[in-house]
Length: 602
Image (cartoon, rainbow, N blue to C red; front, side, top):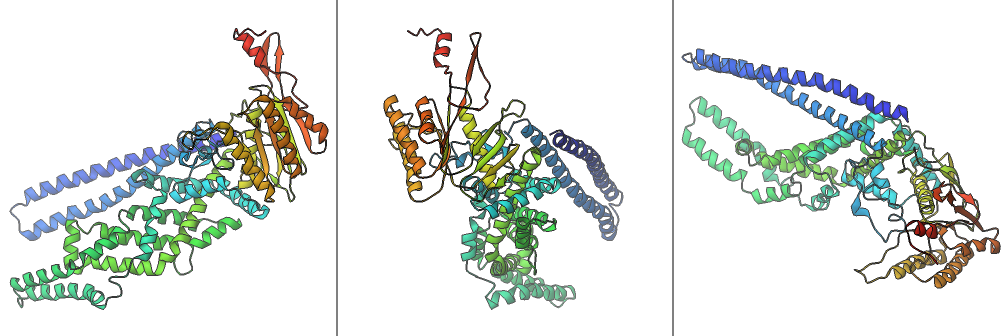
């Protein structure tokens, strides 16, 4: 891990030094511009009685370098913002390495109690697995990554291809940081969300009001030619001011005759100029990179069209939208009267729509995939000690050594093994309160999920078969739907049985079956459920306080194995090793803790 810390710390030092030098240049450019303004005022004062030719020439002599320096200053300022963003991102990564994930989005809106496992495994929300990994900068990238978490892959070939892509992205930290910085700079000005692409439906259905109309295609050339002819005629004395005024009224009427249609076209892309400019820059990052993995090359090929790259096409769209954005500015109104600027940009927008609108979903899909790969590549880079699991061919296998939870501090995380080699097979884990049962279940579930996503896992070794995962660890009652805790749990268990009866091969993780009923019903129901799960040739892990479930290993010696987490009591002190051991738990701690709290037990 030391090399990962050194990487981010080195980046911060390098970018901070560059930023310091850049600030000095910006300050120098600003001082020179100020001197140019002062010099121009002094020169105009000195030449106040000179001819207009001298005054014009003097103004141009000062204004031209001022404009050049202003444009140069804008480029330097953009680079300054870029470096500041890189520094902040590297600082955030150092926080993430210290298990502070607060700078990152946890997608709390994705939390769902109805999902087969996301709530139980803390996939979304604060201090979640998603928050620790997510570095997406586009709305559809965030959606894609969340979709990969919620719907992991079940095909071995697809998992291996994704592993290959994540490995490659892990080895390109500069590309990942550039991509994130470009997207984040745009994000600060206006949130980049999935709603940015809602315009596509309207955009694709908008009718062509101008580009198919011969009159308007001719008018955008005739009107400016008319101005040029009249201007020359006026200059040489062949036309008077009255004719110019009449032509001004005519051009004004033509320019704003179809203002409603222009506004309707603009409404479909309102305020999207900066967004598309950002998309173009993000796509350019992908297009310019060199990839070897099949998945990343496929993403790149979707953007690198033989006729024109997606970044260039999207960049042109941004400029067309920008032209319409300025239509009510003073300059926009003047240019519209001179050469029908609004109609001209609307025609360009319609032509772009005709040629490229059908490709937008494909381009956005490619960008979403790459955005998600950047996050998973960063996760792999930040955990060089994690390994890529072996994907098994037959149901069911999950064998691993030293599994740990990615969200637990590595300095205190106790790692345990798992051994499921066939179907049916269940591990029954017994143990005292706080001994580590629930943490172990989540550790297994999270690493299983990461395996099926294609990501590296927190383990010394791991082999898994990608079967659908179903958990029941955190069932709760619902006042809104008038469901009791017990009924909610029964619904969950019924869903599992229904899926097994339908022929699905599941990996099941359950914590304390039937918690919402009395001990006798709970025991009878738990034993019956376990026997039914075995009869369906299912596989999984069951954690329980009920030691009677441990007797099932005698009835099903080839299908059920007992493991335990013990609470050790020495010298009237309670301690936990959090180590998984074979057999049924021997020590329970409830009575001990009650006595320590002064509760008298007969």
